[in-house]
Amino acid sequence: MDRVSGKIALVTGAGNGIGKATALALSREGARVILADCQLGFASEVAAEIERAGGKALAVQVDVSDEAAVDAAVRSGLARFGQIDVLVNSAGGGSTKDGPVTELDLDEFWRTIRVDLFGTLLTCRRVIPEMVTSGGGSIINISSLRAVIGTHGADAYTASKGGVLTMSRAMSMQWARHNVRVNVLAPGVVLTERVAAFIKPEDPIYQKSLLGPSEPQDVAFLALFLASDEARKITGTVMRVDGGASIY
Ligand SMILES: NC(=O)c1ccc[n+]([C@@H]2O[C@H](COP(=O)([O-])OP(=O)(O)OC[C@H]3O[C@@H](n4cnc5c(N)ncnc54)[C@H](O)[C@@H]3O)[C@@H](O)[C@H]2O)c1
Image (cartoon, rainbow, N blue to C red; front, side, top):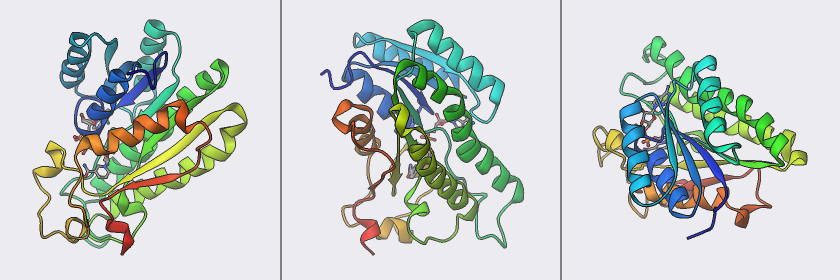
């Protein structure tokens, strides 16, 4: 119950899916959690769930692609809890407007880049100096299996998650001397409500999963590990949570 006790975690996209499961897992293991989401209602519901269970949480509204909003969210978190030890970037996700480069909606390309890649950059840019000042921290960026193996049909999303992966690796080298660890999770199919609504069992990425699709908590368990001091010597890694899909 205390794998991350004493730590303060900021989780983006904490209102739903993987972000929500991660925020709940961190809280169960003793962290105080700042739940950042563009849908404040969902983040507030998760915060209430945490408080009912005896934890401490703060819900903040943020569009991660808006620098001023990210700054305001971080300031609110710092005002309440004093520092940020763990940053989990889960806000984002693909959409059905994506596709092959020859067909995808160009506005969707920039939306995905803005939220998934630029949003991750903005939160890291704002939080890293705070972590350096307080002696270190752990950043966990949610990329995707699509950034690791060849897939088709979601080229904007694949590009943005590839950027998240390589940018994270660069950050891990840059900040290791300040004890800031940066790791990436690359999930395959995770049956969050959003994905369950459109993924089809005949989709090749679904088919490749030898162990079947994951649940949000399957990703949350790894995020919890990376957030904890159990992973104090782990940085720059890409951990796949894909039911074995990348064996192919
Ligand atoms: N579910 C999967 O199969 C899967 C697989 C690989 C990677 N991922 C990645 O995991 C992350 C979470 O996915 P999920 O399935 O849990 O999604 P989800 O839709 O269940 O949750 C995403 C949350 O992010 C919030 N959000 C969206 N845009 C935002 C913005 N601009 N600013 C702040 N909050 C924003 C949403 O309100 C939502 O609460 C995403 O980055 C996604 O790309 C998901």
